[in-house]
Length: 254
Image (cartoon, rainbow, N blue to C red; front, side):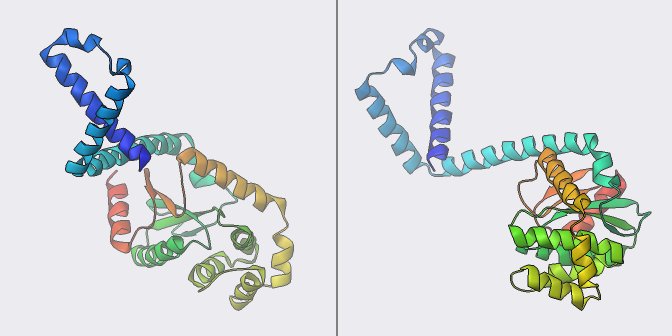
């Protein structure tokens, strides 16, 4: 709230100075910084009174602030998508599902303990199954602690047994919290050889892949999970089935 009040105050002060400049340019030479302590206190009270009388200014200022942040985020992400296209789409170690020759590629940054990822997973699963022309590339981003890291390693190692999609779906759809025992139990339930899986999870290439995913997420400006790249568009946060269909349609047009 303090930063928001400061922002609003700056807007008000800026507006006041512009008004002065428009009516009498020479008066701009008397800066607000020269106000004595009493004047500053009085000016502060006026700002407070103005904000209390006009609370919509707070909302408008925050909306504009968020718009600028979103614009900056999108600009950074768009540049990163262009610069890191090969890492996004063609990392040989990254699991992928769907239509390998699909006309739209969705890159999915996810964490197996993230409730928003689980919600988006159900939408993505249904849309990809119904579409038939979409490829999904999975980028494990275990940011929610050790169980997330174990789940990511298990999912990546499951590729060696041809069970990635089965384990991915089961982990995403499992209720409650995860720990190593629960992850191994889920792995067994989809037909994985758990002893072999645990051995494969020690392969350093999977840790390195997760580190590459983290670096790629940082370059894109990913602030949390889930996050997607759909065609050439960065999409932060959970999306429902209708939004996914629209984003896929827009990617096809481009």
